[in-house]
Image (cartoon, rainbow, N blue to C red; front, side, top):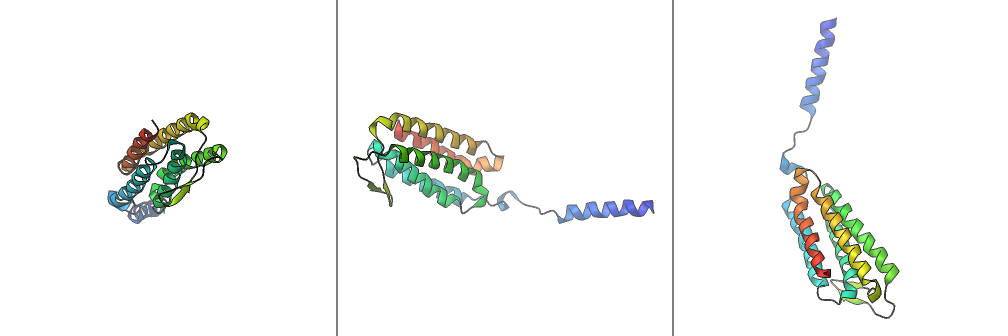
Length: 166
């Protein structure tokens, strides 16, 4: 009787091992194409933001983050990068809503209409962006070794975008 129980335990253990999916590094959902597309969307948006006056750049960057999040959200394994970018987007959205310059109209950039923030709020806006971009890059670089490989170029783009406000 005892040997039957031991054999059953061995069978259950072996069946559990055999039933586990085996995934290669390239089968987990990350792709160079998705990362490149995300970086391309982001860097194009940032280059378009460089063409507008400083008071419009904060909302332009917010729009760029929003567009990037829409692209990256299609790949669920990029969830952590999506959340990091969304946090920056939401922070900028709230700031722009609270500090919109009522004396300036909207400008059309990169398929959207952006608002200007007040001149007086620019130092605070810049600090908010720099802090948010640093946090987003830090989150993207603190994942697993596979995530770091695919999130790294996105984090590099986010960090490079800080030059737009300095």
